[in-house]
Image 1 (cartoon, helix red, strand yellow):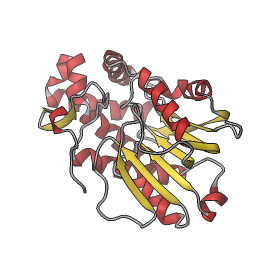
Image 2: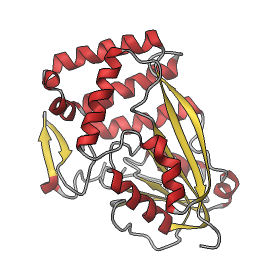
Image 3: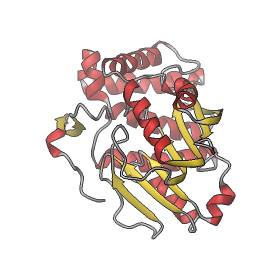
Image 4: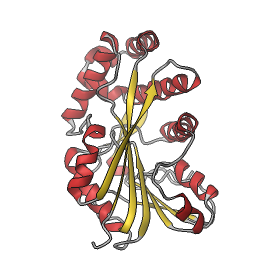
Length: 291
């Protein structure tokens, strides 16, 4: 991996982990190698579960060759996977963290950038923009700024695809999961982050000026329904372990690691019994041709 931090003065250490301590960055997950590894594994889980990397109707264009942006690319797992599958297209990944891979295909580039500020690209650069799971990283106001910036760099007629999980309103939950999600929502609200961004996304995209917006729903089974549900639980558990310092600020009982782990273990049993699940929202839209 590349250098870890571009702004080390804005990093805080909590429970031995690096987290952002920067008013310009709302991201609540750690900034370290473990989180990087989780994101790499997560990409392969989603590909296994949904058997695809994208939903926008652009396969033929990707085969012929277009310019693509992976917004909030993390360690670049999606970016590199797509670059290998579509060698005639050019892929750009942008993220606030420099955890980019040292080796990559020739048709793949990475840069550091903040979505809530000006991205290092000219207007109308990209034919397709992909963004997945930034619910943990943008405030309510930052979403508006980010969507406007993505609109700016998308070519007229180009597609944007944004994917988010509804992490607040899970289906078929019991009291243990409700408590966990309630504390997470309180933590989000305290940081001006919207836990319901998945539900809001289509309206926000239309408000930004995108047209032909279409939303599809998928299912994320939590610890049931075969291997996919087991893998989703593993990522879910990893996420909640990684945000424990933030969660403990809202619920002091979880300052004790063992108490928190025990609660998560009981949540696993509850999810398997009740067949808990999350809605997976995918919104595809275009920039108007006459813009």
